[in-house]
Amino acid sequence: MNTTLRLSPLHTGSRRTPHAVVIGAGLGGLAVALRLLAAGMRVTVLEGQPTPGGRAGRIQESGFTFDTGPSLITMPKLIEDLFAIAGTSMGHQLHLHALDPFYRICWECERRTFLFSGDRDAMREQIGQFDPGDGERYNDFLVASRRIYEQALLVAGERSFLRLSDLLAFVPKMVRLGALRTVDGFVGRFFHEPHVRQAFDFHPLFIGGAPFRVPAVYAALAYLQIAGGVWYAEGGVYALVDALARLVETGGALHTNCRVTAILHDGQRVTGVQTAQGETIAADYVVSNADVVTTQHMLGRHSRTPRLTMSCYLLYLGTNREFPQLHHHTLLVGQDYRRFIRDVTVDGRAPANLSLYVHAPSRTERAMAAPGGEAISALLPVPNLSHPLDWSRLEPELSERVLALLESDAGLGLSGLRDSIVVWHFWTPLDFRRRFGAVAGNAFGPEPTLFQSAYFRQPNRDRRLGGLYYVGAGTHPGAGIPGVLMTAGVTATLVQQDEADRW
Image (cartoon, rainbow, N blue to C red):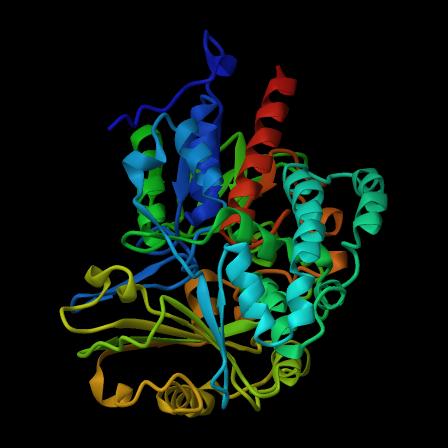
């Protein structure tokens, strides 16, 4: 296996090698570290948790393995490119399985299901079981969403949007594409039947966005799955984290249990960081993969908190029996989907009706569960901690409601699930705050609304302090594995350009 990092000629010769400190070893932090190492910089990654990964973490117990964060991979070309920059290949680092169908969508108290896939004829058939007219409009949806994907998501994802003029030059194209209306409004142009609309509406929820508020540029999330597939990494998404961390350690330094408490500067430019252990580490560049608001606190700033995404209630269940009726990915939509979204993202209430995402990787890779069992994760979007909910009371109530829905015939019909559970973990918004320093226990960063995207999102380069940069879900272009990996590309390019300009 070739893990030699390629060095750019930018830093050959007698010039002093610049030192970049990356705060946080999430996917964004690891990806930007690899890019800076490949550019010839000296890189130190500091992670406050015992293991790298951030939100893309892992739980292992008694033969069961659970991804604690993202659980599917899209746009694998971004990962291929990153490994190539590091002098290796994805084939040497990861084993990916194409999922077909991508996931099953089912509705509470209904027998009909929707198998979402990349097969055009199969998708038209799935849509047609609800409304034949909607099925006839599927091709039109593909054409329109492909334009947004190619001209908005891909192009915008590689730009930094540091200046308002960058955004203003981009807006007319977005208007022509219909990308500034809401996702729900865009989907409604093509699909009228409620179940079909929900099947194409929900994708922004993967990055914390409500389809009734976020712009239709995020409708491209459905198209990128249809065009490029949905993939499962053997060993889970954490296998990607592990591979990136090993490559970073090959060329740089990665320290865990090392929490940064302050970013040091002289008023004009960063000079280094200070850790919780009191150590000062000098740096020419600091890249923060921490929560955006937490980063401002490290600077001693008290800036306005952006509108943050919802949080999640998560159950991780290891069972001593198999449930063959499970699919790898399942979306269970509750009876009042619109009210559910409003409860969680606007009104800040415990949801009256539940909609769940259920991940069962042991359906694809038996090694993710102990022999004869299943590894099951259930994700329920819930309000973040800016809403005063008593989680000591609410957690057992929600766990009972989630398990009842999973077991009941009105839900997934996993009869006997409770009695089969041998491993049990749960996370609430309190865990997102405690583990990741996520303000208000948010799960995905700033909400990806129109006025918190592109120029209006935290820029990849700090607008006030030289040498300070941002990477990860909180900066442009945003959350999700593709978004986070794209932030690393934008941010690393800015660092390299600024270093070249210094000389």
